[in-house]
Image (cartoon, rainbow, N blue to C red; front, side):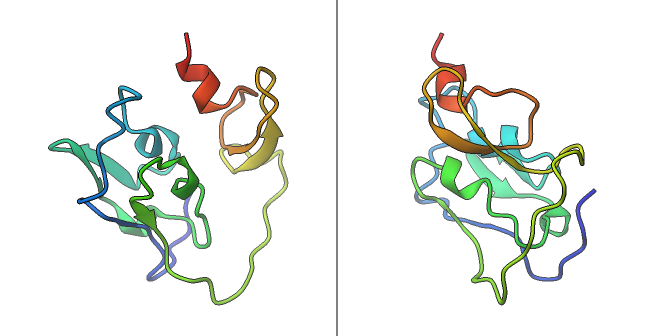
Length: 116
């Protein structure tokens, strides 16, 4: 479950967001385990900002349009143990070899997963 964190949540720039039309669905919405983001009228919006985990920026690099931004961190944070379900872990894609962060139990990056 996400921790209440005051002002920590993403900003979505609607003029940049294309809803990941080339991927068929918004990658950031699909990725976030806490349901912070929603797809509305062809754009991603921050629907539930207080569900965002303090310090998490995992959705930001998924955006090919760079439409997601986070506030600057006041300090660094540590990741929880990898056995905690739903938390981010760093892994290597078994198809392309790229390192990526995921909250899922698969070892295939979203780029390779979308190539069928």
